Length: 413
Image (cartoon, rainbow, N blue to C red; front, side):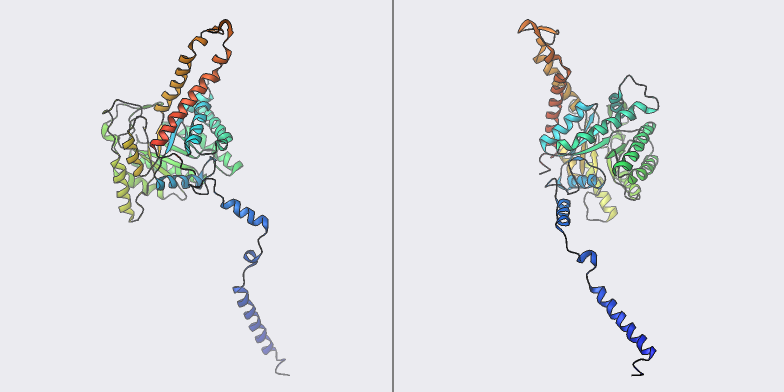
């Protein structure tokens, strides 16, 4: 009995008991995992696993897509072999036509604001000192998209187009708006921004892009950057007289850019590499597209990385209006996930308005009096909504055709 009550023996037995208890606890399920799942827990998990679109990742929902949902969408496009129409808009009519088209063809759409388009939305009578009208109009248009996009039932990417070095204050203003929007909503106002510093030396171009990508990454905003030059003229960017050699990007330039931008933590980017692209529509034979440049660039990057991924870079296609279906599809095979469209949709909108005027010409010559009688009112014909709606319908129809060329039809479900 005295040996059993020996303090040293008691301590040793207590230590052994504690060790055995700890060992048993280590192999027992933790309370967090062992707790039974309630019906509410299970219904929440099921909701999280529910996909909005059968053919797209679960992160992609109807409405404006940003952050991981955006990169998931672009990866899905690259893997499935389709490209998203990226359409320049100038107001709610063209914005709505984009989303109407996407709902019809069953795919995503990229609504694209230019600096001039933003100014037009704010009002051309306003002063644009310090880009104030361009900033305000672009923000206003973006907020419109956020309010209505989900109603169309499709993923919508909110993007801004060519921003030259002198126009960076415009992006700075939009970035400030996204910071405030992020604080309030947990997501940025814009999905992505394009910086077009292709007129600068390569190192300066990518250096500035890298600085901005550092800022973008903190807000889940994707960067689109340009290498080489897109010829022609669009919305204040005039490269009509550029040396033709600058229309073709080299694989070494793409690799350098990929290396530099990949150093940004959480950074996401796409590349507008020039392969003979020209803004506008020209007679056949005047534009020499070489999409093989994109294929060669992918192979070059893959070799440098020593990876199995055959398309490590996400490319975008500028100057898409008027391009042949063959060139478009070959470019998509090289990893193009978006094609810009502006000239063709501008014409389509106008053609719709023009067709409306031609159809109802005799009802549009005065407020009173038409072929049905000299005292008949014409208000329902000259109501601006009538001709604008005709423009929307024509633009949407043209975008459905573009989606067909881009393999972007029925890619949701």
